[in-house]
Amino acid sequence: MPPSVLIVASTRAYADSQEILRIQDTAAALLECGNAVDVLVPRTSTLLTSVLSPAVRVFTVPRLVPFMHNPPRRPSIRRFLVGALMLFRGIALLSRRRYTALHGVNDGALVVRAISGFATVGRLPFIAEVHRPFARPGMVKGPRAAFARFCERRALRRAAAIVLPDEQTLALFGRNIPRARVSLIPDPHVELVPTAFTFAEFSAALRHVYTYALGPRGI
Image (tube, rainbow, N blue to C red; front, side, top):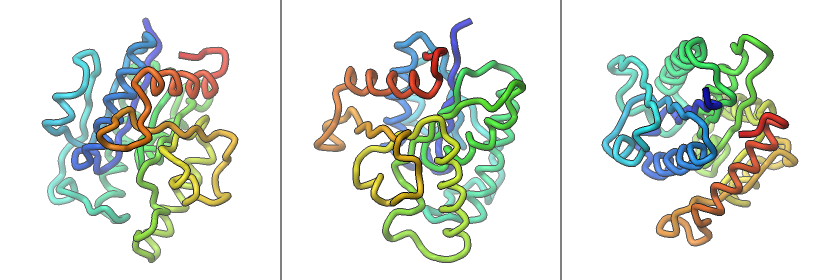
């Protein structure tokens, strides 16, 4: 059986086309390395189902109205509840397939940090990838935002490797994350960012991150 990776999207992934494309590229790079790939999203979207390879298994969580309906961009009770559902779904998936690593995107990194503790043998390594941090400018203040930033920092400190898109995102965290584990990997889409990688460059950079995070096991 090939090594397997579970990618956990953010609680707002279906509304974020750039995140969906990033998940597509990450899944494609992992498949290219011979991995099996599962993706956990709160719910699917037309873009998600159209861009992912048929080899990728997609899982969703129960849709509980009104909690599942368009949670806001800011930290909220609804996003917390969606994240909790994704955590329970991830634990269930962990019991069915032996994953080599977990990969959380945006606040999905908080979810994989929690899932990793339920591995049967030791703590399952996870990669935290953040493009829209709770520390970004314009994020509302208050106890919910402060708690979200606290959880985000803790997840990044526990991650085997951290992926950020650029120096500007790195600067938002100051000295609150272990910079030695940070890799800056731009999107491989020149139509989205002027500093885009080619897909070959993106795939090589991601392979390097996984080799570092997993040690001798690699991907």
